[in-house]
Image 1 (cartoon, rainbow, N blue to C red):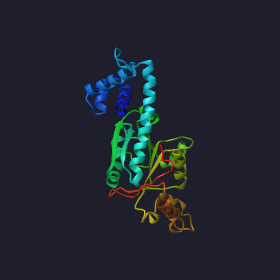
Image 2 (cartoon, rainbow, N blue to C red):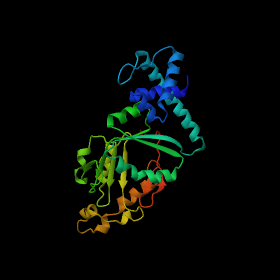
Image 3 (cartoon, rainbow, N blue to C red):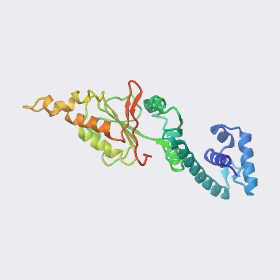
Image 4 (cartoon, rainbow, N blue to C red):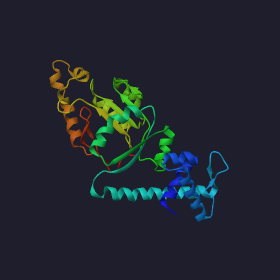
Length: 274
């Protein structure tokens, strides 16, 4: 019995078709079929009922495949430990993403991430939300992106759009990914609502002007605070300055310059977000 054979039966169980499974894992169908047949002979049982279409596991085959998934999961963890032993980020990351946002969201981070960490191999697979969640559950995916909410005026990204004035409707809800565009306005109450909506493993992406100049940038929210006898210079800038300080100090926040594609800092959490 080999790790390769176990990976083959898991692939056939996933795609329920020998030719499709072989294509997805980049081997020939005869090779895949021969290795599974050898495993069945060694164990003395039939793992798949080939008379049905699509192919289905036998009763004992289901038990074997379940254990095979656990073994492959542990094998991957061992490989991850070995790869990260020198402190670098490397290895294969499988990312499941829903098709409606894949072509718009992935370009935001792909180039800077690959530039910073060239030893990472990213494998993207477009799938429905249910399949993404299943893949995260059985450890065939490392990362899942299923839903994105954009708070701000830009409507080019195909996703849920929420005006900043309506973010109260996100209270008590959970989102996988929220993008907050702060170029026109930035309200502290909005940030608090959005942090609550992604709490527990989601991702909050903030689009901001240059951090060096942002505290001095005046927007509509600043203007609303400037009630006589106070001017806009009296009331604005302080919160943004504290926000920039937090962004640059907090270890869980990643900073990416989207104009140059350079990663100023790769954020991390412990444990890592799911």
